[in-house]
Image 1 (tube, one colour):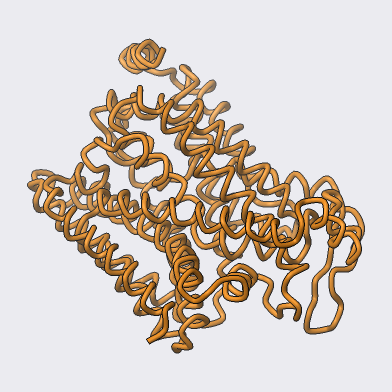
Image 2: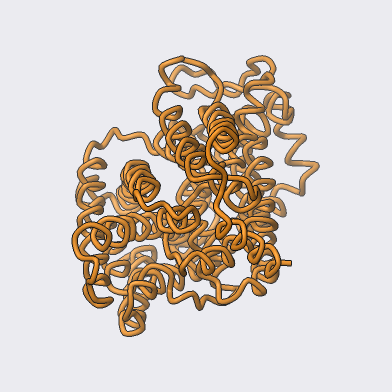
Length: 500
């Protein structure tokens, strides 16, 4: 039995144990969906970061840096994400925590929109829930595919067997413990991801001789690898490696930076803000998340990818294997097993959050609203659990095709949530004049734009037009229709006063 297999087994066993422990702590739907709003700063910070980054942090981003160095989109997307995350923590987190409690203690985004705007037609709630389910099915499927490929590449297990194993592990602890299980496993997973990337980046830099030597070697391979404004092609099968391909261009830079806009509309990240113990704990959580949960792993991933260019002798056919290959080359099997478990941690930490938010949309926003309005809390918890199973089965079916593209699905879903809910959240929290019709129009316009934009064949990331058009729709429909009621305005003012 290999050290890597033993390490993986121990890690997975710990995740299941957390699920069983938190099972006994989960008694109400609020417990299952938001952990009873009692997360401390450390758990909130790392849970938000871990559920955000997923497998692309250890697979996709190092792969992009390996294929293009500082150019193409790797550096710019890291800058955009860093800016977006900081703004999200600085301005959105505290106000969303307070506002969701004022709005009849809302525990999901669709419920918040309905209560915030006194929407008796329930259209806001239903349409929001539909978009959440639609985008998360593909997002969850991408995570399952990434997990399957990790198991397949590490243990030489067939793709479909790997897919089932990964899905069973994630569903088990999410099914049992709900939000508490997801959040506490995310704390472990977030720490593991941060340590893995920081350790590998520092170890690699020391081995090479520091940043100066790293950039010198990269420049000798191709000057475009150390030019943030230059594009680089990487095509191993054809034998053309790391060749300059001209400037990135304005559209490319804007598209990469626009990834930061996505933060304002990600339900699985916003749920952490809603679940923190008190809005006063946000400041400490922000400091932890931005430093240890964001800056270190994000830029560690870029460094790891570039180290791979000058360290791995045989160019990789698949650039996204760089972290996995680098770890296996640089460390003994025991340490490699721990660091490879971090890849699984990154994947699991996002898939479990996506399953939970999707299940809350089914249990809270459909089942209780339209089928069993007087359902007991215990019944709703079990409906939430069975919703996790249902969504996981559909995502498993979507992931069954071995040629599924992980990165494309993640990019599309990220844009979908960012454009559909980002403007709606920002205007709901920061514009007193916003109305129910404005938010409804913004959600629909943002979501539909994401679906239709690929038909234009434009190189511009769909996040940009989706976010912009959604914002315009919110302003126009809010100004032209009936204004907010006195109760809405009074509630808004009380929230602003409490936040300070």
